[in-house]
Length: 217
Image (cartoon, rainbow, N blue to C red; front, side, top):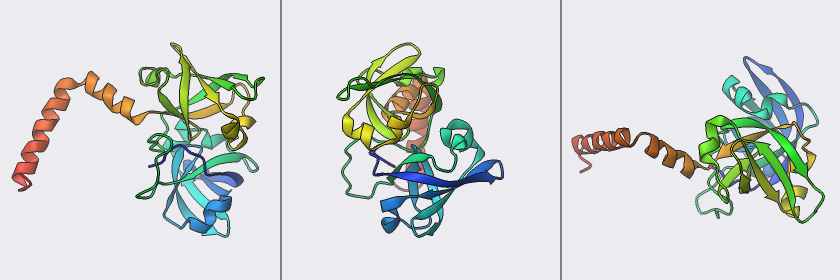
């Protein structure tokens, strides 16, 4: 689990095919000293596992599902990525709860970077998550916890403060680039309960029966 606060930028050293997925070698910079093989790091918002670590360079394997749903499949040597280590017990939750499970790859529709104090990006809103993104709600874009400034039927806009602009990959985006979008997990579960209220009630009953059968109640 993550908070959507980028800890540092990484540099892709190598990106090669790996089965139906891809294998990445990334310079994870300052995260290397506190990382180990088997740990999770969010790379542009996608939760990946470190499979090897040599100095500052970590290797990550992404399966075909991850490549298909994210912009990781488009990464090339020299590209910059947002990095965040997984939360530890007791860490401060400064952003919002981010799972590292990207919902959709969406193109950037417009970039208004004329006002340094209020840069705005407008991003396409895929049909699969339109009901999960609302004005003033939270959304993760390339792993960054952001507030939705405006939300239309098939688009949303985020306002980016100077610190985030300077310390993330957002400043490197161009119109047409695809970004990883993860909807707020709270909205996801609320939508599920609304869509299947009877199923939710039935599953609660099954859960209670299982607890009784196993002596927990």
